[in-house]
Length: 337
Length: 284
Image (cartoon, rainbow over the protein chains, first blue to last red):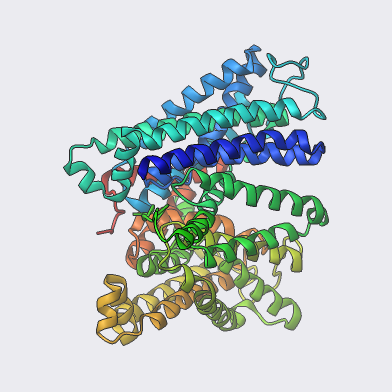
């Protein structure tokens, strides 16, 4: 039964992945491609965030810090030294993982909300440093040097979005595989044990700090990769764009909305939120009156009130009712401790 | 000069404390992170502004109106939204309050434009309070005295009155409180209302010297989160001391390192303190 469930999950995930890959070929519209790219970016960020919060139960409100570090590492290396962005991307991931380890290690003794607020404080400090750091052009931000269109240069014509899509699509696949592997490996069970009960996990001999650290580093590394992609895609970054609290919150929101602790969660959440916010922004945002965000906020409240387990929770309920068995409790645990 | 900085830091600290008291109450009693707290503050500032510009009522006189209005808003928010998410897993309540904050902030922008609004001539207006070498703006002094009064009032309400004790009991153990005959539903709604009243007072007082705009609550709610965690969740006295510490840290950090670093100093102090006291200064 359990193996069957895994097999199904694998098939469904693969199906979703293939479907997403076909979409941009089926609908050839530049706006649609743009939304699709953002969708894949945020779904991946949600998957990465899910590793530390969904699986491990350590709520992070500071993932914008790792996203920004990824974006800035590759961009500064390219801008100052002409280092290839692919190398920058990898280095950014490593730096983000190191920073994550350094700043979160002392915070792991904090429980629940205290940890969440600490991550928020760390991200704010890092943002302030980048705002006033002249070497990285401070609040002005950096415009990336324009280079020839090629995969090696990680740059394409702004109107040609397909290459960008397939790059981020492959990165998304990588994140899915890693998240799937973590969830179903021994480490994944350790992480879930920590989520369910910190004390119980310790009592059966799990080194909770070490596994929380691994989860945080993996999450930060993956998050940073998409920071680089974001910079290469928009060819401009500033601290308010990549380090700001709204970036962290967007990741939190879409994952919780989709379903915390489930691999489907971030994909569903991003599939709902990103097109919603982009289409309302395109159609209603031009007035400068924030109508798009009024609708967006309202919908978020409604989903939270009527689907407290996220959209995945809704599907599970339907499935359970139709089969009368196979109960899976996604995100049932209290991530805030 | 240093004395001046310290004095104005402490004055700001009392106002921060009042904003944080509202947040810490909700947090302590319901275990909910209210991301819309800053937006309640913003709405209180707008209330004071519109009372002033439409009916030329001074913010200090319209303060009871703003307080009552935001109390009611908190009460209704609980009844309509929070009630449904209070027993939901972990982060759902956060999702709801964050959605609400987006809604309120952009609604304010839609209705009243993103322009900065000022209240120019108030009773406390351009007056100054001179204490030896220290010169303090009257609006700030009045605002912090008002904040101290409100914080004290809330403290006494929670510790001395019957409803206050019921709130404490509900915070400790909801189920047992219900067995003792406490209407926990009502207690939750009242707590949310009181949290609203705190920012209602703070907002009306702040509107005399801060510009009112849709984003004006955002920064204070961020600071309030840090103050609440610094003091210990659910601890009113902790919020008061936390507020003063953060007010001072902001003023001194801005003075010595430059204004661009003042919030970095605030967050850094928080991170250092929780290394020694993982549950905040007064948390248990």
